[in-house]
Length: 605
Image (cartoon, rainbow, N blue to C red; front, side, top):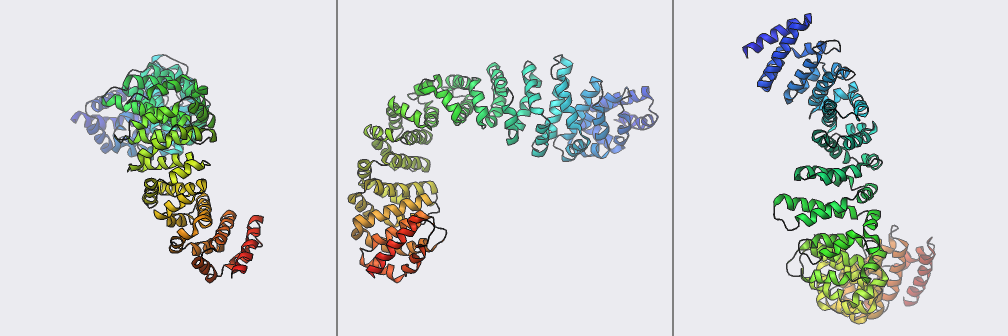
């Protein structure tokens, strides 16, 4: 290290004289010292003040320029040296050197700038101001097609420099996207796919840029899907496939790219992985199986990509998915995939006609006791979607879906509860007999009332209320109303009328009007203690209430007149004042109902 001190002193003199021979000797000594102990040598270089002199040595004419840039690249590997490099004014001359024709100078300059930018706001900012990124992007574009090893090494360094420059910085990433770096990188990947280092660098770059929403459009206009799938097929190592997965996941969020990935054959690759890894208990294989499954479900979320894979129910992928249902390991993925295939009514009708319901019921049957929440949730999700088309409801009811679903009433898992409720609600829509049968099921109604109080799970609470209301609306049955009254459900329907969602308010008011019309005597006390009349007054007086809410509130008021105690409450609250104002409401139905209600109240008073 004493030699190093001498070298630094000598370098100070020769840097001023620019005597090339002795200068070169000093630079070689520094590079040797850095190779032996980078950190200690860097500290000495910083202490000696020599960094400031390097700026003058970075000239295109000098034969020592590449070595100076190399030294800067080496010292900038240390975090503590990056800001001093910026403060010493090295960025501007380094960026100027990017215009050099000498490949070694370009290589070392790219390394130096890349290392100074690594995790350094000051470094990135200085390179940005000096316009370094645009020059590097232009180089990538012009050198892209040359495949000799030296050029590939330079391309790798330039890609790395851009990554260090823009990593986790949205505005700099957006800048690179605007410079058109994405099509260039995709082209690089296609041409240099045999070069592992360059391929890896491209993948890291894609992974960074793909997180940005504005990048998706540019990616979609390239053949990225084709290149990534081609590369994926060649990979055997888990780590390399993992890198490609990390790029595919954010890209597959875009519908256009989803379709491109499906057309490029990605799903077949994923199916292959599922097939190979499904019975493995190795940690890496389990992780890869999960990633492949998640990605496959993501691809199915796009309407076009999903239909492409469904192919009218004859698609190879859909058929493979069906064949997994008997296999315990692949169940989860099969159920999730089916839940996505059946987002389309046409697909739902086809699947029900082709026996999918029986397979899903069989699957649920095997998972009643073991509590595999993901399988239960996915299978119930699939059944819920299948029950949406009107023509499927009766078929599914007669297949015994209600009975299969009710087995999960004892589940304590909110995701399962939520889907169970949604499935039942879809099944009884406009199915009076089924609604009556379920509405008289005391166990079900009591569980619904219990879930109506699940304040920690808004989804479960909302769906329970909606199902209670649906049982009354679709059955129009006195027995159902009696069961709900006896189980304590009335107060929840009254509370539901104050929901922030108009659709839920409306469903509650219609159900309450049916209760008042069919079983007012039975429900009277509960309606009174739930303060229904006060709530209706508030809904009618509130200017923000939707027209249909005002309309149904007035219908309900008229229906309540048959109860002496509720009638008295209506009189005490001076409803006539509020209702007479609604006679001039802009909505004709509301205005008309206001006149009718006013007449009714006047006669009754």
